[in-house]
Image 1: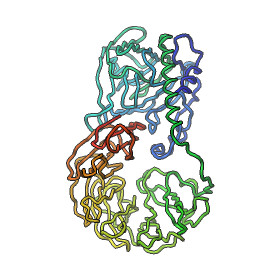
Image 2: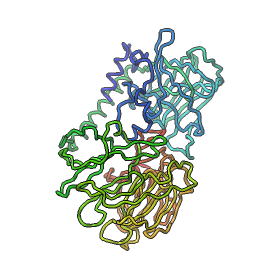
Image 3: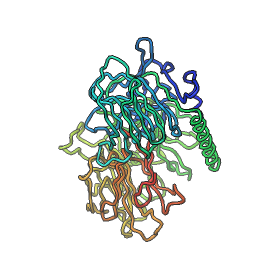
Image 4: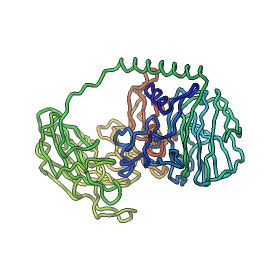
Length: 561
């Protein structure tokens, strides 16, 4: 953050009392998200990118998958424009945000020139910004109002933003000129001005500091941003930032530093986050299996594996199936291939779906050992481009009570699944809101695993133990089953990061214990994140519509932060 503060001061020659000042002249004309914005909006769900094609620092597009911001000039002056029409069936749930500043900023005044290009909704200035689900807005709305609002971080219903209206005043405006919006913050106190005239006052003590930014749910232009504060406040902010950075540096110094261990080239066969690890050649060392894919039909909904490359961790190629091409390395979806000792002989195989066949390949050579056609696509599906299923993800479970997991669970996206034995004989099948991946767990200690899939729990022989699939409108992005309390005798629970449904927790009988609307939750991780909290904790991160927010829960499903 210290680096940001120095950069912020370099935007324009700052005068006494200026915390930040920018006229957008450094930003190039055009979209601020080319070329990435023209490829796939989910890229940053799977891959880290500092921006989507244009370096915007010290500004950030807070809704990274939304290509909302363009730059141009009007009457010789640069402006940033929000060019999308974003009013939809999810009122106030998310909106374009262009953010700058530091969380330590407080007791400041922020000023920006705003030119709405439509009367349909709102355009204005963001202040006291904490996350893209927690901030304040002063805006022009509907062609006839000035409003003060606060976005609250926890929603009370699916896909409907939770807002607190702090005040509204009649104000008729047009789309022909810029209006200067100014917000003065003094502790909890808020004073809002238009063209120098006070129009609204409010007080909110819960969130008194934070970053600033621009927002609009209609096309609107912004220029000449300025943030000021008393000199003593600026000095205090700088001191707080320095203390925070020193504490962070000390914490980092107390943790092991990563060191580069291996590095090798992947000529034409490289891929993004699409690799499996396991001993393929039988030498007792971990190898890598890298998959390339080609999307089909629509986006990434019917993806197909195009090339598999097996390599050692020294980069020596073991085998390759398919023709590699670097164009096919991008990944934004599940792909059906895994490394697993499916027959229990101590040697790993590759289990995969390709060309509408569920296949088992020899791990050493990649040569096919066995295959069967994938199941027929059900006739009632909304999308049915093929007769046979293309496959989506593969998991393994010990449903038969043997020494290891020898049953294969194959699913589509996102309704049906099939269970096969190690010889690819279909044992049974099921349906529901399957989500992305099952989680096997021996609940009753009989040596056979049940498994959670979506919002349901299935027995080893295919009985639906309980299901809440019909209760929720978005799929489970990630699920986990276990006893994560500090009581070893406690019963396991089922945890789900349910996309737009947020975080959910059930007891093992399927009774709902918690449902917290934190945004589009996914990718759960269980670990000892807090030494002062009993048991283990679950951490999850949002992506769609509220990307980048990290939430931490205790074993009982209480939100810790």
